[in-house]
Image 1 (cartoon, rainbow, N blue to C red):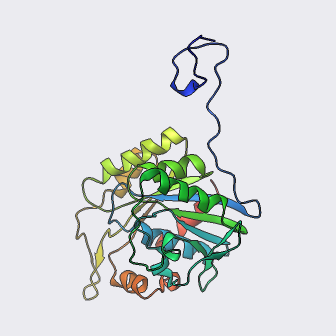
Image 2: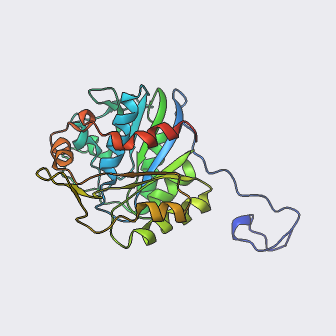
Image 3: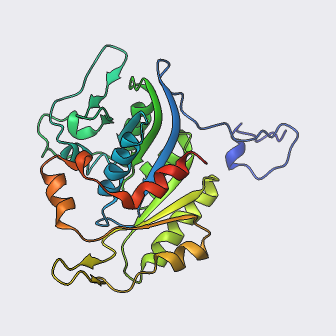
Amino acid sequence: MSESCNNDCASCGENCGERTMPQDLLAPLNQNSNVGKVIAVMSGKGGVGKSMVTSLLASAAKRAGKKVAVMDADITGPSIPQGFGLTEHLTGSETELYPADTRTGIKVVSMNLMLQETTDPVIWRGPILAGVVKQFWTDVLWGDIDVMFVDMPPGTGDVPLTVLQSLPVDGIVVVTSPQEMVGMIVEKAVKMAKMMEIPVFALVENMSYFKCPDCGKNHDIFGKSHAKDVADKYDIKEVSRLPMDPAYAAAADAGEIEFLQEEGLKNIVESIEKL
């Protein structure tokens, strides 16, 4: 051991006999909870419908007979409660926080269910945001859950990094839109996932096309789909293309998202079992 050793092997370039491997960064799950699969839903940029896809996936899994939970990790821009029509504040004990239940029984935790007013901004720096996400895992009484979907904020910053390091994430769903930049966006998420050794097993191209109610044809409003090409390039097994449909927005605005039947994500829900 060097005389100048500060006992921080992560910042040291020496190869001494006392050098140790980095410690496991996984946070302990609430002791009264049991969570099977953890699926992170990511996007490289905002505005692609990540929270919508998270809600649709959770609803599809619930219809498939699973015990489902949604952790809204987008602390500064939480939108999950709106889609499910949740307005009550979360309750808890001195040691645990209790999730809210949707009408079909999906358990949800979101910062917007803890604010005095849903329009109040959360003006916190990255480390505090990351700490809240970890508390959603350690302090919430989730109970018995088959699959938890984590709605991530866009990008590859503090909170996504905290989720991928602190939670036992089994797989990642990347949400995109048809623009040409989709390849770059997916590549960033895929490279981050590779560094964390977590598989990106599904790609959802949202707003992929518009089906004309008069002629029945599909029109590529935002350009030709690149979903299949991107998935092949990065060896992403599952691909889903969701249409531009006013019914999605109407259901989310009305808090009825869990009653919207969307068969386009069935393949992703089925593939979660294989992770």
